[in-house]
Every structure is written in C-alpha cells, then in structure tokens.
Length: 230
Picture 1 (cartoon, rainbow, N blue to C red):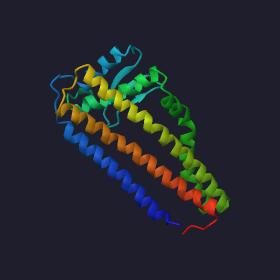
Picture 2: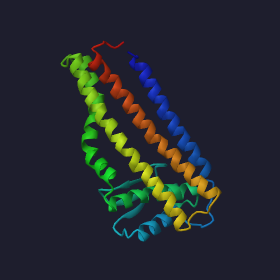
Picture 3: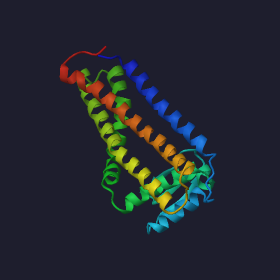
Picture 4: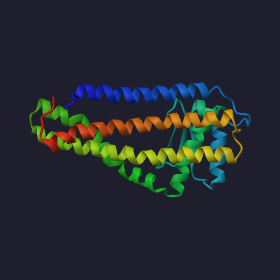
C-alpha cells in the first residue's frame, strides 16, 4: 500500500494548490471595479430583497475570504473587503453567499442534507484526529478496529464533501445569473472576472472531496483485501 506520508503530502499539495489559485484569482479581480458602482453589501441587500428574503442580516467581519452564510443565525457574513468593495470579486462573493440564503429559503435539498450532517461530520473529524493517537499510545484498539473506525469516519467526511459540491456550484450559478439579471455587472470583462473568481473558489471544495476520498480508500482497501499497509 502507498505510505501514509505520501498520501498526506499529495492531499496537502492539492489543498494548497486550490487555495493558492483562489487567492491569486481573487486578488487579481479585486482590482477590477464594476461600472455599476455597487458595493458587495449593497448588491447583497438588493439580491435578498428581490428574492423576498427579509429575515437575513448582512454583517461585516475582518477575516479575508471568510465570507459565509450562517443558516442558523440567518445572517450573511462578508469580509470588510467584500462588504465595502466595488470590485467584480466583491460582488461575486457577496452574490454567492446570497445564493446560499436563497437555497435555504427554497429548502434546496443538498443544502438541507448538508445542514443535517454538520453534527455527525464534526464528530467524524474528531475521530480521525484521536483514533490514531489512541491506537499508537494506548494499544486499546486493535489495528483492524482502528482501520474500520477511520474508514467510517473518513467516509462520513467524504459524503459531506460530496454533498457540498452541488450546494457550492449551485450558489455560484445563482450568483452569476442574478448579477447579470439585476445589471450589477456588465458583459465582457466584468462577467468573466466574476466567473473566474467563483470557479476558482469551487475548486477548493473539489480538492476537499478528493482528499477525503483518498483517505477513505486508504483506510478501506486494507480491510477489503486483508493486506498490511506500509
């Protein structure tokens, strides 16, 4: 079997490459001002209003690229750069998060599944951290038992990441559509810039899924074949 170190380095490289790509693309298009003159917050407010969503707040925070929609608190969180920014990148990110709010309003099935799986996925992420330590330092778990628990935990995380893909790509699709419909971005360079930013962000979720799939298979295959790993 492939050594764990190689698996770790490969998945680390995938994640770092995806993060580098999205930061580089965002930085480039954060300098592309839109002719409409809207800020990310203003665009988000209008998108939510047009969708008939009045119970979602729009708040500012400091973390760059930490933008997200919080379905439990019903709030859309934008980084300062995107809250006040008037760039294609700022509007693209803001509209993407609005896409999640619209998904929530419409009870979009993959989003509902992801929300329902948050608790069990958090537990699984703790297992993959602690089970190797328990097995290595306490000897309380047999190797095959540890493998089984790890395979199940990584399987849960893989399934969560798989469900996340349609949620994120659908939110980006909605963002591109609504920005065009409401006239926040112009055809040509602005539209291309928004697409590039959102497509780059989507690859981070693809990378997360690929990594979890690799770890799932790495732990599962020895159980199926009965072979020892290196």
